[in-house]
Length: 84
Image (tube, rainbow, N blue to C red; front, side, top):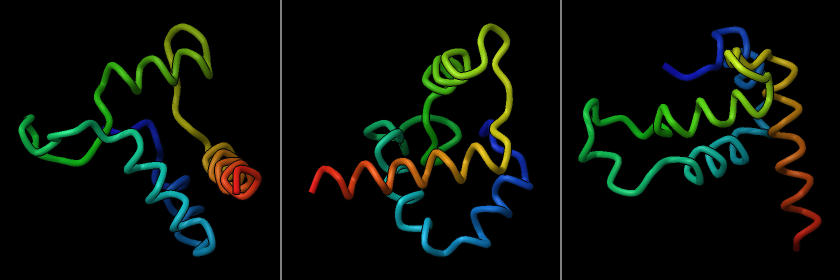
């Protein structure tokens, strides 16, 4: 399961301007040949998620809050615009 709660996903649904960024970021973290693993879902590996959550929250990880998810995606969109 992704470390994103339903309220964080609801916050994303309310911001259509971030949908493209969310899809781009999702595609960037999904491993190649994701369909060859069980369950065949386009999700990052557990190891990758554990690493990212530990980097963000420290040992034990956590869940992204709605404001953290939205802030991260806004930052990604901003960085992409700067790179152009």
